[in-house]
Image 1 (cartoon, rainbow, N blue to C red):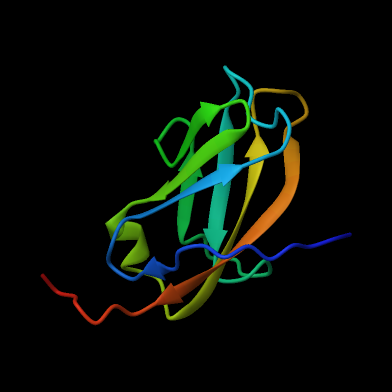
Image 2: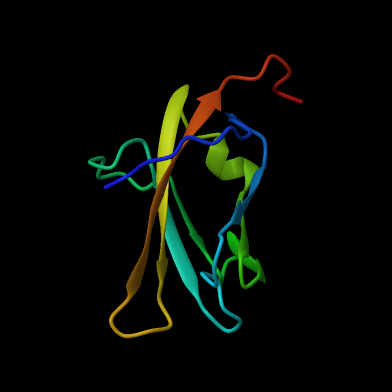
Length: 114
């Protein structure tokens, strides 16, 4: 197992979040459907948000790019620290885990309650 660390934006509690995922190969083919669950940790039982192609949380941009989007109402329930998410392709049988997981920092913004 290998891991890589890439810099990216933190989730700001109470604000919408967007991150573009880019792969070197064809990981997000046209017509594919994706689902990912956001949790406090991999072992956490509580799902903080479910992102999918159907609900607009995972949007295919190209064969090598996928946008991950979390609505403000879902980030509002998060705590300072970090969250994890992975992505599963659900249009194939059996479902196919895409082989990566993300750990994203979660911060309390200074400007909030607007």
